[in-house]
Length: 322
Ligand code: DGY
Image (tube, rainbow, N blue to C red; front, side, top):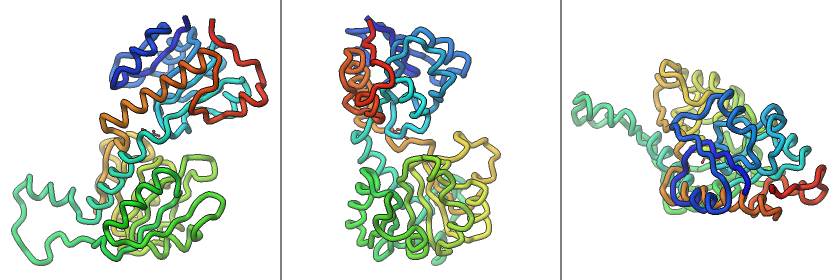
């Protein structure tokens, strides 16, 4: 029996399944463990099941001498130092597929919300400060508009599929130069939706020069990772009208402090990183993360491993936990 440290209680019954074979230590608070608490609780673990809020870096990996597996509870794994895990022969798993449609739906919710200015509209209703007027809260049409997708992977493609129902033209820019150039996409799109993973290459990919290339009527949507966008540049873009609005599920920093200037910008629709927050998606993620751990702890290949090279050239023999 191995010891697994799970950094938050998960929806569904996947943890019960893990508990049938292993000792499961769950961080029960709603807030993430502090760094010191994380290092302390993870120290004797054979396997970790962290969230995107926990940095799995060299310090953590080296403070867990028994560690043989990390199963991230997310599809994006930028919280893990993958090179360091690989060097130590530790397989890292993620949760692809099960959250694709939920995240695409939320992308559309934010796109529509920013286009039709729903946050302002709701505030006006709640404060009773509106009266019918022909030019009150005018927004942007979807029909006939161009949607530019940056990163046509699983989620980008699911967002694109929904666009046909809205009568939109879709263009994309993807890894390896597929589709149109990023500059062309920014210049032509009425809506720009980001679906790239966060890597050293994509960090800050939307900064002042890119925002200035967009149409003044365009809307930027980000349901991927906050640091893809230079937040200060986005604040200026919204304040000074370089673009018309933004729909954000992710920000940098995250969470935003309550007095952050972004929160006072016009044209903003914002959510607290809930792209995958449906019952089915979050239960599916728990199942995949647990499947990854169970396989690794049996000494088998993780079904969703993001550093499969650990199996091919094993820098250190993969040790099934005792
Ligand atoms: C992910 O999975 O990467 C999301 O950001 C959290 O569900």
